[in-house]
Image (cartoon, rainbow, N blue to C red; front, side, top):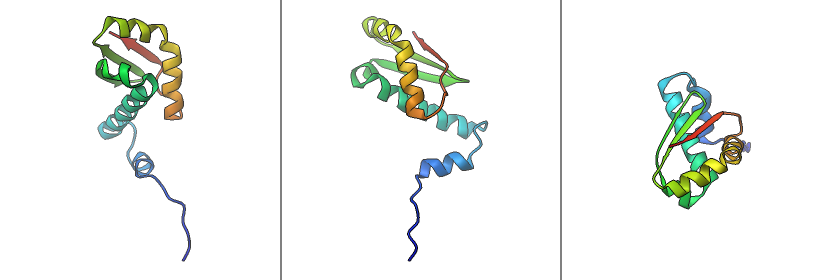
Length: 97
């Protein structure tokens, strides 16, 4: 029996679905959202009420002004962490409201 390298289902979907399609955009939005939550940590992620991603711009609505100010102060490092998690420069603008 020949042993084959395992492949993640997400990688297969990404290869089969064009990024410009509605499904491709939805998958990227989900990946960016998950990367954001991982980058900011549990407590800041819980304070995030809404996440929207379109054309490299990530908009996050934050429920607490204290968290919002903290996130704004660390915006560059958060954006860098998100892109590192994604493995490519996907997010180029990060907006907290």
